[in-house]
Image 1 (cartoon, rainbow, N blue to C red):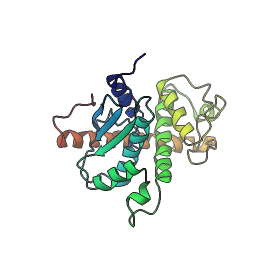
Image 2: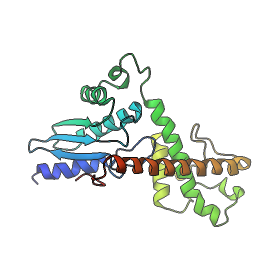
Image 3: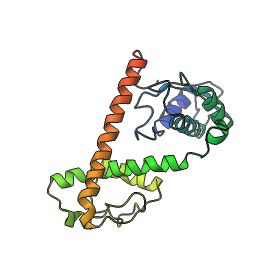
Image 4: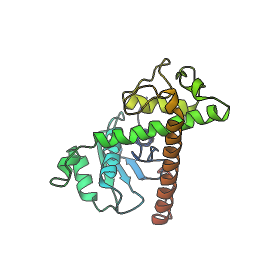
Length: 235
């Protein structure tokens, strides 16, 4: 089969859908952060990103731009990738750093002191907590008690999209994901939550999910106000 640049463009956009806002834990395509994605007949891809505000945190912004670069670079047939973050106070540093694959510290020489692995892990732990709420809420609503939840494993938990997503986030952190793994674990250590601590753990999970929902709504509103004529997804 001949791979056309239009096919590659579709594949590149699909690859961008795997890139998530690290804080909101949602795809940058769904959030509307991809302004455009094009691929030339020679396989050169150009991705333009835009964010809700001019002052979005540079560490979050760098992560998304670098992840977008990596995702599109992996698409078969793509020969070169340029990621352009538009309308951001640190666009020059971020765009140059991503193009050179220099890393966050080198891109902000003299200003940044650490790479972003710890930050990514911090937000992944929040995503695991939020995912725990999404999986456990129907169980609690159906009457599941802490005594029942403490011994519940992933394999014994009713299958759902939320459970699949929770497994993926746990895998990214190196946490247990097998069918015999406990459903309720500390996202920092991977250890099972003791029964007396389950109510508090579930409250933390609920608050974390509510915070993600609120921040997503705020960012969506700011992006809509900043770019009122934007499409919801790039095409």
